[in-house]
Length: 155
Image 1 (cartoon, rainbow, N blue to C red):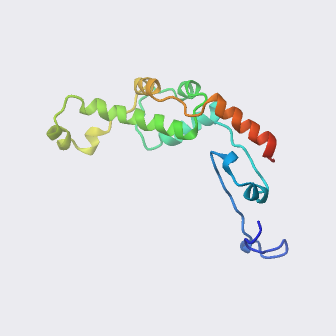
Image 2: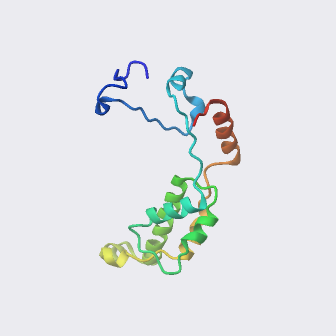
Image 3: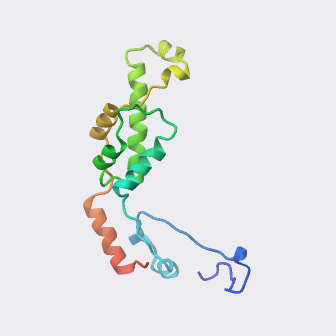
């Protein structure tokens, strides 16, 4: 990239500069900058396996009930982005806490210990959450990304 670094192939690799950029709106990148970004790679929405892995990562610190089927949830969230999946997990996790404090007064809630608030997330929590949280990427958006990659992308 012009003006960045100046190291050549024979120089110390630890002194080389690599620029890595990411955007959700590649069509808004200035043409001059786009020319200087030699590789333009589209990262698609996660596959079923990827969604299951993202669920596992997002729920790593969460107590999950035995009835939770991550593979089934992964199938139900086809078309969800990584951020969408994080939101689903966060909301489902909060469902358990909401269940625990339902009907309690503010004083009773404050009196609860951290352990008393820790309730496992159930499959029902995910079912309710999926009725509230939908995917954020539309089919039109996906077509727009594909069209941009066909015109400007590289591998």
